[in-house]
Length: 108
Image (tube, rainbow, N blue to C red):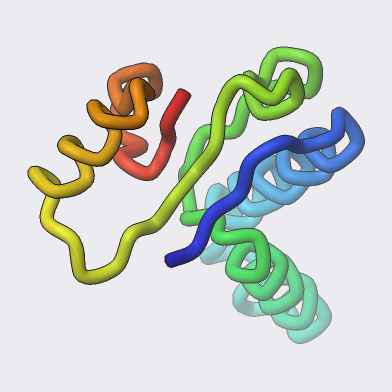
């Protein structure tokens, strides 16, 4: 199982920066793929996304607006569990999965 919980504002800003760079690269992908020096930047951003468990196009809250920064949310990627099992665990622990649409790993 992978997960994350509290985040500092600096770390949230770092995640926001990575997502912003990824969006810029994806927007200009055709143009940039033809430039050799940009291939390294594209690979670097892709590695950074992967290292932080981010997916292309994933939304990340602006620094100062994330519940993670206030210790009110956590992310869990349960492997080998059905959605029903995860819902039962969330209910038993009195946490919600409904707060962020499209992010089944987000609990608060």
